[in-house]
Image 1 (spheres, helix red, strand yellow):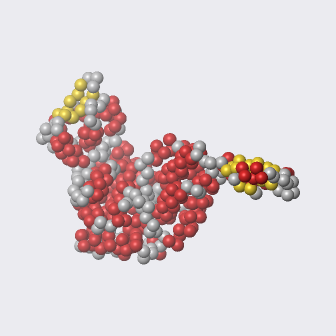
Image 2 (cartoon, one colour; image 1 turned 180 degrees about the horizontal axis):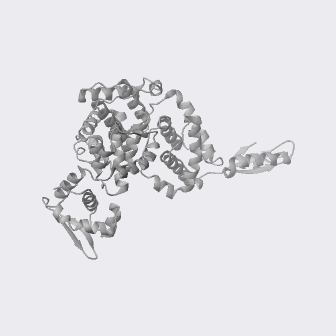
Image 3 (cartoon, one colour; image 1 turned 30 degrees about the vertical axis):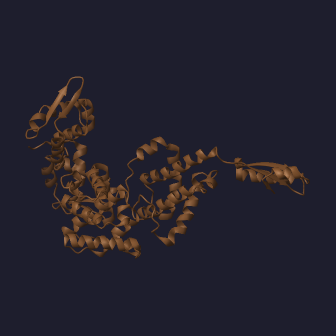
Length: 474
């Protein structure tokens, strides 16, 4: 049975619900009017022929799909395997246009897109203006050549960043995440990818085989990647393999090659490339080893690993101190006593610097929650991020500022919890020049240690009793 793009969207929304949903909320989920959804739902049961499922509705309750779980899974797999974009919805159509341009960098005439979407060439031309703005974020430019067609120009780095960003903004990567968990259980990870939306964009067969390769290596640095970093590595490699199989030239950029160091991460990148060459029976350019190497360097791990850039660790430690001072000068001393915070920030910043230097995108799925719940900390971390900008010479994205907010926020909470537990130290200050100098010294000490000490000033003489009751005598 053929499903219209809009019907696919409606069924996908219904399949996510465990209970009935109102037509109004369903329309909001799909992103169209209530009337449009009602019109489509008139044909719902007709569309479900061939499935042991029923579309049901009840006034005051809502609408839902009834049937066993296996049939629902079958329907979901089928409607996820094709194109779910609605060409008559301008926003959806423009997303599809971005995707088509990224998938096919070569020249395509306007007629090609207009026939695919069922709209006029004038409409496609108008859409291109909006698309150009989005692509411009990654240094890519749409060029129009009269009589020839439309193509995209830009460097390899920008091209890959654009594809990764498009996937993060528009595609549910749940299937790759599920496969990541299956790999931990010793199962073959890629089987569910082919018919998913992510598989349609990256080529499901390629993505499945890539996942089998990298998880089959059982390498610690791969298996300890966070889910987001694992997803990023799979997407990155799948894009590369897809291009190589199409005989598209991958341009080497000298600045990438210059930063490669033959350490453990480089050996891992070479091992991954070797596995891929064996699996796909292709020769992978040396520059791709560099791309994978830098992706590994820029990845986050669930566990803190000591491998990294040893010669830059001192520079990172200096950066950490400067960032803490920029966040809160008054509390800086106590922040620097928090070993958990310092080690966590050090481990976070090493791959962060790599990502920023090379424009590598990282997804922050809780960014909006962070900005909403911790606006003050997020704002202060924006100031902290300026130190990173000075170091790498590039702006720091909101996603990275969000991760800094998590680190500083957690340290701030620990600091507040310890506030009540801080033991005050009794300090006595005496100076042979007189009590005036003692008081001056006391003021300076209090400015540094604040409420962590209790100071008493004395003149030239001091009794043995007083001496016994002062913990520190200056």
